[in-house]
Image (cartoon, rainbow, N blue to C red; front, side, top):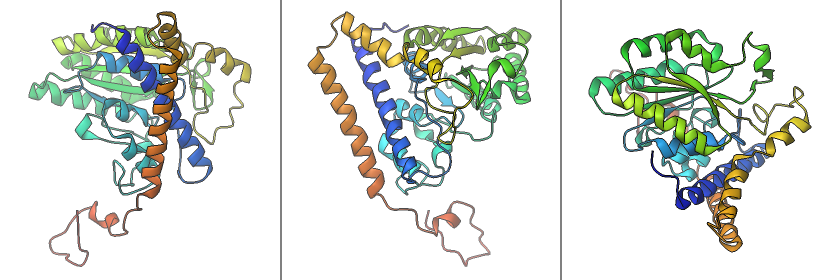
Length: 332
């Protein structure tokens, strides 16, 4: 695995801090009704992405996930201004304003969504991995889903075929404790979701996903296994979300004290503590990072606010063009 150096810790801190503040801004814009529909935030789960990115080869590896999907494409290289514009429904967004919060997509940077149907991305992720194996790209697909989606039948179908064909895919369940408002303890008679891999003789195990170091180590091993041609791995990332399932979630199913306990192991704080303990940055340098983060979030908001909404004609342009029906002009 690539060494975790001073520079890595500083990058982790700046990236995770930006992702957190970016989504805090989205929450404020949602309250102002500038972000419409649903809004599912990643606050608390940032170490899952930070650790994974350290282990990935972004020149050929890919990622697919569910609808808690704003910061992943940013981590993979998508311009955050375009992500925020998409959330505000603007034409400068990643899908020209038509995908919105739950459907961020950027094929150019290896990010294949943003899927709103629970568990739909699991077989699609296996399919992307099948294409990589077929064409010999050497790429590995990271397929993320939530603990609620782990109960979908499509997971078993995908696991079976992925093992049979030794597909270069890593399946990752982000277990944040709750499927919407239903705790893991109430969804099945077992709470160790990773053990679902045992039925397919798939390498599997739990990971402390509040710690990006632990995530990076587990992801490196799984990705290298897949890249060698030895097939998939199933990892259970034990994490926690500080906000509700979505912005409309009143969170009656858990206590404030529970959330506060998990805030004590906030992944951003853990990384910052290491930076301070090892004197990787001075207080002034940390403040400068925080200011850069704030400035970039403001820049994203300004870009999104000032961008135009799509023209009505765009609705027709992205469906299909019929040669013998020339009455609707197409521009795309």
